[in-house]
Image (cartoon, rainbow over all chains, first blue to last red; front, side):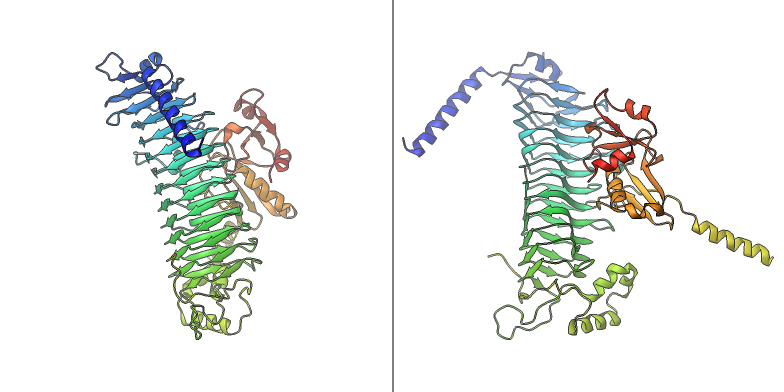
Length: 421
Length: 144
């Protein structure tokens, strides 16, 4: 049998099986005016594979355990109100779909992670098109795998007096694996998306704005992919730590201002690829500590205080074809980071010529300015920024380099901004 | 009169030299060890040197790791403080505190330890037989 035919046959059998399953499955409609008045009543009647359709309305739901593999569908965003009593929904079985609900008001106590939807040690869960409001941990997936969290809108507290300390992570994965987090919008939480010990996940097309601490935060989470997300206006930007084999493509890290705020904070990140991202309007675009063997290419660093702060314990990182424009400082460092390479980047501060017209500057560029070294040691020296003394100092240092680390050097600076063809 | 002025000046000098812990600004201060923003008053810590330099930490494991990497300087530490998990806002001396290692604690850096003033309160915070109780020296052994 040809592979194509085999493929069709598999699909056909699949359709048949689902058709048969559908025929057996029932739909239970829930509304206060009908016979089935609430979801727990519906769950008692339901069998695995059934659909529970919840009509528009307000339902008091607290600590409701879902112990059957059902599809929960909300029509017109019915409100599931936790009344500050604990969790709202607790998924205890595999194969559950929760779609189209407005989930609100979990307990706020700080000793337990109260969740909007808690899925513990289960798999094949789909959480889609829900709205979360005033929930401590809206989507909480400890030890969960092969699941999807898609197109949810999460807003932290609606109360003005809630402080950062009383909020949890928007989408929190703990020892989870193979989860797709796509198209969600998270704001007003402590961390927008938080991964701990979670591997093999894809995070794409999410928007994390105005969270108290980090837009994205992960620790000890290897082999995850982050594509086309927007992280902006978060208290401290994005922090990723103690992980390897990360891929970050086409994300935007923007408007993260503050003394401890970073567009992207990398600590002990190894063997990762960070490409085609935009780092704009941050106090520090990327801050790197103890990072090894990462590749950074095609990124745009625009209008940051420090585009790149690379500590001297970073080794084997490669920077090529990045654009550095309008930054106060392009690269700063606390010492002399060795074995990192800068090659063929565009630096708007580059003042060399290209006499042979090959698009590459004729003399190398030293992205660490003497003044940035001074500011690193004496932060108050920033008051002299753009003064005559400072430009004189930098000019003198460029002519006769003696203090800036010679290890940070771009031998082939581009004359034009790099554009991906 | 001159004497009074002198005394006042002297008082100022003494007052400005007092070494004391400084309050942690949650959501603003960053951890000296891991660089993360300090957010959780249940797990934070602080070291103050005899010269008055303050190091703040977001988790007891960060404080312990920092302590371990500065073992030769520990003589210069005036205060080594950890948050009392059972009572937010109160700090304990790290070297005398009891520590509970329990995965339900979810401390910021993944080691899952919290500090308690005595053995009884620490035992009360965990399910029987679940968490592991330890002292400061045990904590130093389990942190990176």
